[in-house]
Image (cartoon, rainbow, N blue to C red; front, side, top):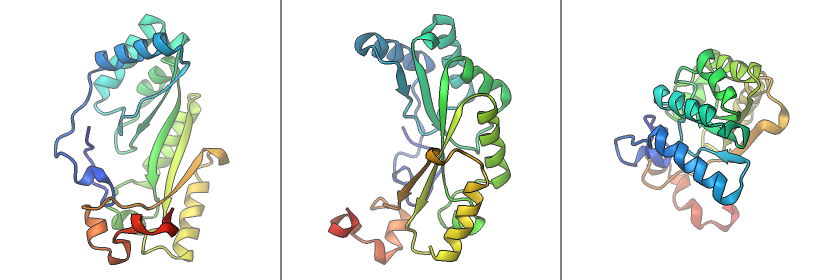
Length: 202
């Protein structure tokens, strides 16, 4: 629960100040139980940042490999490029049968990132995406539009940077801004007030 980052449109900005994580043992036991109970073959780990802390991700992967669960179950996860995604960890994740890593990038230009309180560096993004792909794991890229500062020129620049990542077209997922009430972005954007009551938004 929680996230160490405070993107100013996201509910994590107003959640508990601490980040609480499940142990690798609990995660592993839960995955085993789900696989046995429902005979599933694919599982998404819904942690905002699976690779943080790194030690937990390593322990989880090792448990999966040692138990043979990686021969029954494939995994996907989400993480942030601000956490070191080194070759050793990526190779271990692939051995544990991680087939997809989702990157919640939202935007790539420094102009946009500054306005939504994200601190991604493009060179880090490219390195992480390339490393994942080179090790046989499919990257999925999350993008977001609908910010009040958006215009055609900004979006064209964003588009160019995203396409330059070279990810397969069907792995780009686009969402529209839906700021959580109580976040600083919502509170300082009068045009966003009660967007969820507007039928056109749906």
